[in-house]
Amino acid sequence: MTHTNGKYADFETLRERAVALRRDGYSLRQIQDELQVRNKEILQRLVEGEPPPEWTKRPRAKDDMRERARELRRQGWTYNEIQAELKCSKSSVSLWVRDLPRPEPKLTPEEQRARMNAGLAELRASRDRERVATKEAAAAAVGELSDRELFLAGVALYWAEGSKDKPYRRSEVLHFINSDANVIRLFLRWLELLDVSHDRLTLRVSIHETADVEAAERYWADVVGIDVSAFSKATLKKHNPRTVRKNTGDEYRGCLVIYVRQSAHLYRRMEGAWYGIVGAATSTD
Image (cartoon, rainbow, N blue to C red):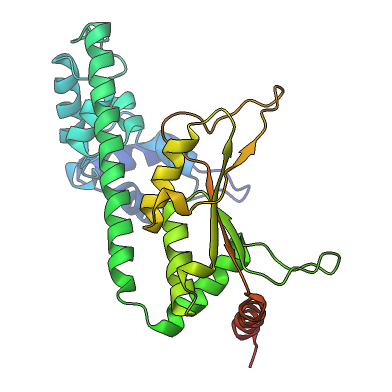
């Protein structure tokens, strides 16, 4: 069907045949094979103006969704509402309805802020519930502690929070200070495991000079389970006018300092056990 110079012979004759085939229900691929026309541009020109047969039209699954989106937009729905309703992307919603007029706001600015604040409050509450549930599940998973587990936990706690012996300051003694009541309770339980009686403990409160010292001592006495009179004189921290304090208010109770007399042997046990933990945890064997 071609001349030797590569050009297609008698275009009008080819077009007549192509139109006839198109009207008989041929697809472009079938017409291409029938007429041996490999150039896509010429093939399109041959059938120009002739609609494709129905059977070749690809079904458009989103046509119904598009019409539904336009219907909802006319009813005043926002992009976000349409997206949530149709379970589609926001970009698709925009493409389908962007030629329609923007709906009038359903809510006043005050109502919108109230709805937004309510949504944020519910989100925070949901996250709080999730946070609490995670913590409760983790706490329940611990179960009971064996003496060995309590000993190792106490060693790690002391090494993180307690006073330690230094080459430039020999001080092999258990000396612990903390502001967290639960940390203090765990440390005292650890001392109990090590058969340290209360009469070997020196206890005092360390607190800022502007705080309520008596209230703090009553609080720590209740945590430890002793009388306030058992405390040594409190250590008062001097106020630095250049420092902006954040540990203020009724919840500020300073720290409790615990000094264990005649505890050099216990200190050495603690330090040795700590290095044993480190060695076991980092061993490649």
